[in-house]
Length: 391
Ligand code: FDA
Image (cartoon, rainbow, N blue to C red; front, side, top):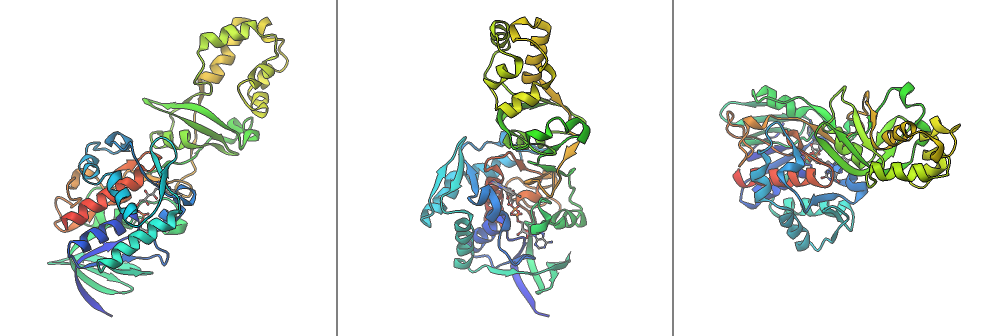
């Protein structure tokens, strides 16, 4: 077995690990970067439909969920979307804003992986892929025993990400290392994930699978307005993925399917309309949706002949649809893991564990979870950069 000595061992060659390795190596640190996967940065590759929504121009601490909401502030302020775009510019990689500050790579996600890999190569990072980590311990130095040998280092950086999409290599490794060294981990749950409903409650809507509508979705104090997608098992689409990170078991969703319409204007229009309810709804929605959502009123006369009580119940159904999910589609379909290594046990400047000198956690394994729209990669770059500068 080979025994190597190095300054830093990093485990996880994803978004945060590659950024951190390149940053530390550029500063002269000897870095060994290990990953159990043979494919580099699979999550970058599949992200943003293959075009990687790599950052968001409007990034603010408020775009992140964490038990410690101010934690992300320092790292985000020191490595901004403009810093990442300057790296892309230096490599001649083109990008564009799609909407709401979301930045995508014109040439596809591979270009970003190639750039991060090139940065690591340029500064001499030793990247070992397909390397299984057997055991980590610490006496005077950290000792990592892995299928590729034993490595001793002054610092250990854990960048193994969250639990989503286990089939491309996600593992709970990072949380286990935290626990091994006495660093607390907050409650974990799938985030940015489709929501499911009881089959009996959902059966009237399953025929709407594929219908997408502009909607305002509310849960508690959180509200998102973006597209909502009906699926066979429940709801998905950006507004639902966004709210899912805030949703807790048992909470109802409150959905406004006509967010641009005032209820009293709708009532006046209904009172004056000679259309049947389904035909009235077709003005606003696809026919398939109007027929299913208006099914209760198929035998009704023209809108103008219905009592206000009925009209108001139609409006309520459209603007204040209350429905309680039974669960989520879990880590198999989630984009992120909410919760993680408790930030109260880490330095917000360096990502180092307060009680374990030399141990760092970066990226998604930390309890900092971004909303949909490029915020998670921005956290991976920023936290990786913060640790890379500190090492
Ligand atoms: P990341 O998951 O990138 O990397 C972790 C690395 O650790 C992996 O290479 C893995 O193989 C390795 N690893 C895990 N366990 C290990 C072990 N036991 N031993 C050795 N290595 C191990 N975000 C965003 O901002 N914009 C977007 O467009 C998208 N799109 C998107 C789509 C889909 C389908 C998903 C699932 C996720 C996204 N995300 C996203 C989220 C984003 O991909 C995610 O937050 C970052 O990749 C997190 O970066 P990390 O480096 O922390 O983990």
